[in-house]
Length: 392
Image (cartoon, rainbow, N blue to C red; front, side, top):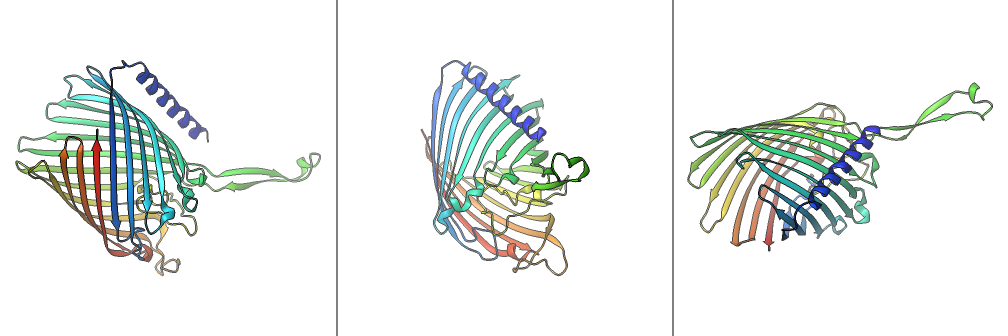
């Protein structure tokens, strides 16, 4: 609890200092307004063997107040997002955020850094109110050309999130990352990256109970009783390597491999009868819950009229810590093995701008998951989405 309190105080300091920095800036500013409207179809909205479909419509609003300087820029912003579900209307939810970012160029303007802070709030309908949260986050990022052909990026993020209807899963997260890019004359780009995340959940809470009255307490034993179940802390390292190659003037190909390694063995427990929706923050099934390997290939092609199409495909293995694979009746499988998934995925996306600040995005995705946990074993999951963006 002392660590959690210290983290919240640090986030408050980050937010306050960044806000003071904004207030002290000159008033020469411009307003940024952006609206995003989208609709999507998912043939297996819950990622399960039942393959239940759903249609989702979304509306997003971004309002920013940007104050540019000679070598720096400050932007305060508000974002709001609403999501409506056709087949499961009780899944509707909205998120709202307020934030501020300060960015500055250093050296010959190719290097620089940024710091920022934001607060956010999410609200759901009563049936899914356990997703409701309030949060604060602070971040710092930098990029430096340590050589004309070598770019180094680093970042740190501190996030606090409170699920007030599911207090046990509230957490503080520390996230550190570093990435190095090497540009060759071929033209080829080589990349290596490493990140470390650590989620600090609430610890179990005990209360000491004594027996007897105040005259007999010294003669009677005391007992510690668990009054709040905790969630184990989670840590994970991600290592990745990537190579990108220009195949032609308007064609690019990239290959990436990454591995996840958990530094802790704790796992979240899903409340009885609940199921996380794929488009939500995965409270009960986030990346800290599994280790594994992932291979991805992506081809990008520039088209006439400033259009761009991308093709992506890949394969991922996931080994879940502390989660026994189960059958459809909810009973552990005969072998007693832990859950293990093999995911195959592919997608194609098209982006087309129509005018300055106006664009449309189309995307089709396919996914198949082979799992020894029969609830999560499915094939042929299809998704189709369209998003319309207007900035003015």
